[in-house]
Image (tube, rainbow, N blue to C red; front, side, top):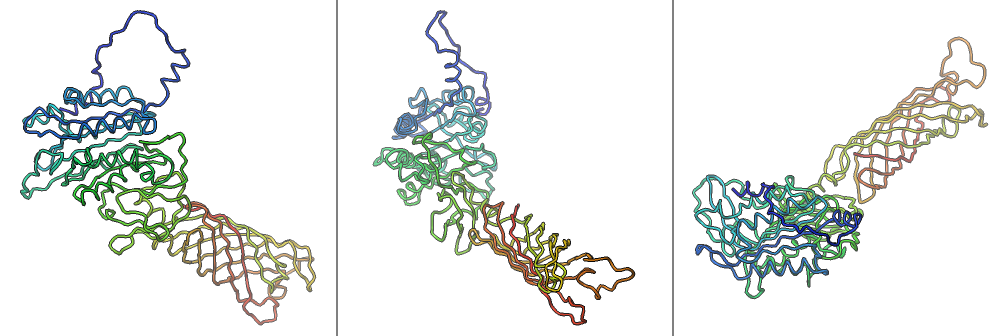
Length: 556
């Protein structure tokens, strides 16, 4: 079984050494050289097949040799080692397995690896599923399991390889014209499981890519006019003469997914849609594999939005608009300059997303994750200094009460960055002076309050708007300017000194500047009013209780 062969790590050829002295590196230099990250590629191209059941190809070896030259070139990939397997003897199943085993035993996490295959593929039906094989030069149709390379086993093995940055590229097909040697089995009504070529992104490493020249049910074609497989030709174009066009984020290098996007679009156009390349990527931050250009000179001021293989078909064919302008379609990659942008994802006239997102330059974002990001935070905690004013109560609290309050908000998502919001807050402060007969008197007095509100929040780019209605309970405790009267005191007799307990209600408005998905600066004003008799003359009326503050909001 290919699985067992690939996972055997102990098969190493005998090593013969001379017993003599020779020149060597200093210890420090040797250690430094051993620890330096390495870039390795294993490139396989098979034109000639031993079995007459498998027709020979014309350009698979051309594909492999051309890609090997590009990856070796200083102005291309500048890979440290490129192993090219193109002769019939070097492309047997045993040779292919041995090359993969060596990659497992020799490479480390910080290294980079590209494995490329150009040749025939085939598939056989096993009960309710298909098994796909890459055909080696010595593969036999009567014993595919023992002489061909099981694609699923290769993909599973590939995921176990140490390098964090790695790409598996397959220019073959498995049922159809071109690089395939069998037709699809007649449909007998039985369900087929696992018919996808690409793995789920969740099973892949943080910088792993699986690229296929075509998708299930479609051919992978060779072209005599191009002298290559169609997909590989445009992959080479992305890494050489078409590099500037393929460099979607204009950072001076072409990554695996930029190369695939370029080749995918050109392939579809060249074959009039007959061949549709497919890929799966998992990219975390800047953990992407560079295929061409100088990674050390990389200067990225853009963010990347991407989505490839996904379990939800609703994302296929989605158009991506940035700030109202069409920038591409899914599956694929869209580059955007860092900053706050309106991102719209639309399909068939229906918006799957229409909201504002802060995209950090140099970061990569899965498009389906943007729905969660653009929805905005559901909760927030805000602390703010405030000033409370009420001119009719100047005898109680003077010209104003400086203080602080803590606010918690909870938002029910009703669309991208908008929804009904509830808020609870508590606060307190102290009035440093009061007015007695219109004369300012130094007489500090504490004030406390608690409030609740319902509001509607909406983010527009970097502006966060929130408007609603709230109610505030206020406590102004007794504070006597002179000697405290004895006996029972009617607060109405000396209301300014006996204190207040009242409720105020009214509209609320908050305007904020969104710094990031987690932080915002907000200015809040609450022009509430209370029904009071501040003069104690028996005539109650509405008096203002106005709160204004500047706060820092932490959202989640």
